[in-house]
Length: 375
Image (cartoon, rainbow, N blue to C red; front, side, top):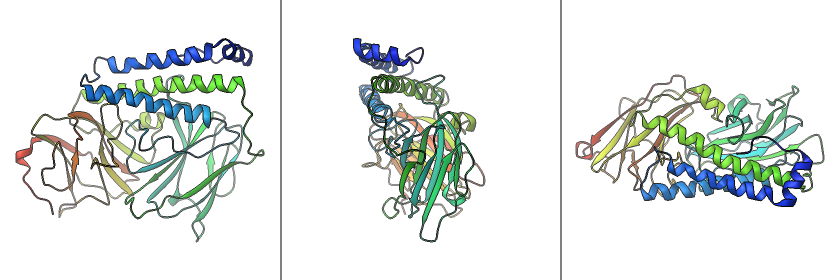
């Protein structure tokens, strides 16, 4: 990691003599200690996923801080998606991010369309600086906004108050995050969104040595910072495996979580012939889901495998409760989720804008005791 920000003259010297690139490579190399932490799994599949995870974080970092890091010309793009994952990314989400700055004013122009949940948040910091926090500040959800009958809307982003839909920024604001959450991906359509800077012509800063020094430095820090933070989280969950306690909301908000969501993080571990049974009675809420992840807190591949269940797709019991079963093979029951060949990993249950926050119950049972009861 770098100890301090450098001046313009120092940045130009670092580009001239190759220091920028050398330190970028050294920082990436040091991030590999993630796989050698005492609590990191030694299974070759898990280690291979760990190296892939670091490469994914690097892709995200380069996109965020080198290609699209200029707040003078913000671009909404998918930083986390099907092949870049981190921090128990939600498989039901369509994430968008854009670089912003509290020194400027912005406007989002959009059309609501039909996605179940649409939320806009302001964040500051990033996982690779200071304490690694990416604090969530102001947050605005579509049900609290003024939206025209045709579904169109605008949102102003600024430090100074604005009329209508307004997302307050602070001088240290650095990122806009948009969460669009599906109940049914097959039928719902994400919002159409554009962001523009209001106090300027919208053109980016011409490329400078300072920008590349800063961008590569931040990208490398991001890889090391994000991987270390979520490794510590996973190791904490490991201490009480196969449970789903509520995660501290203040900590969640400090590291980029949605303040409208109650998170329940845990660590699952199953031997041959075992299943994890998760039971809950969902409260009144906009959305809920349960997902399983690998050790590195990446959601498993939801494109091809059943690794997430939500409010829309779940099969409920007559009393309104739901039973979810995690097992290596399909045991012939409702709400089965596949381990996709893993024997351990992290997991997450979430309630979105819930009236109550009941804690899900989790326990390990022999698969033979489940019976076959798919409706």
